[in-house]
Amino acid sequence: MFGKLLKYEWKAMMKTMLPIYGAALALAAINGFLLQSVLGGFIGRSRIFSTMQTAAVTLYMLALGAMGVFTAVMIIQRFYKGLLKQEGYLMFTLPVKTWKLVFSKASVSFIVTVLSMIVGIFSMGLFAGLDFLKVLIELPAGIFNLFREGYQREPALCMHMLGFSMEILLGLVVAGFASIYELYFSMALGQLSRNHKVIWSVIWFMAVSTVMNFAVMLLMGNGMNLMDFAETAEEMAIQMHMMGLGMLAVQAVSMIILMIGTGYVLDRKLNLE
Image 1 (cartoon, helix red, strand yellow):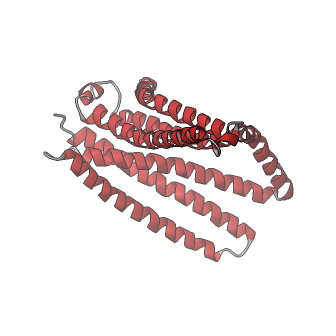
Image 2 (image 1 turned 30 degrees about the vertical axis):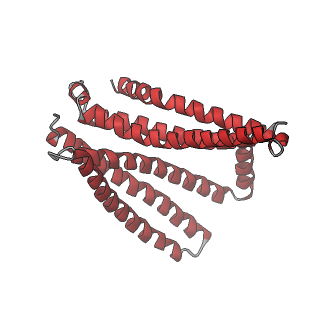
Image 3 (image 1 turned 60 degrees about the vertical axis):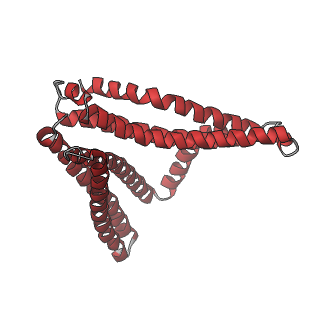
């Protein structure tokens, strides 16, 4: 059932996002062609090609902006309409726990957010034309060779850096989920009010975000102070892992608190109209 929920959310999101991704990539490719091909030599001397370039860049920027806006809108809309409005009557009758309903939406929302970032970065790279594609193809081999050379010189330090990188990456993933659950928790709380539910959702989001960000910054700031006491490379490596794992732990606790809060409101307090 959880797999079916993921598939349902993915299809619903992609109906809106795929055309935007396609438009952004197509416009980026057109801009790259105008800038990097033989036509590029005429742009500075021809009003027609100059107008084409300006129009293509403008349309690309609009597509890029629309991609960011629609990503945020779809994350909010899929939760709001799917669980807090009429569609919620059907969703809550499914033989699946509430946290799985919410987590399926959060998982797809996170994937779409990452995908939007990848498409945005890739589309900007297309401005460089074939040179960008060449670098992109050679990048994995370059990273592997860099890691191999580093491991041959300083194997212990290289492994510590690899581990620290994985800790930070995992921490960013958890932080992404925590940010999505901030939205969900705030909308669930806002739905409890009798009037002006959207306004109250915004107010709750500002309050929840402020409290969570302050707590995270306070804990991480105190953790950074540990680095001042490192005197050797071994101590630096240990404290580096403490910082990475500390960040992961703080974000994980934040996400769990928001998950529990969202589930509690949906299970115990929500009154669908």
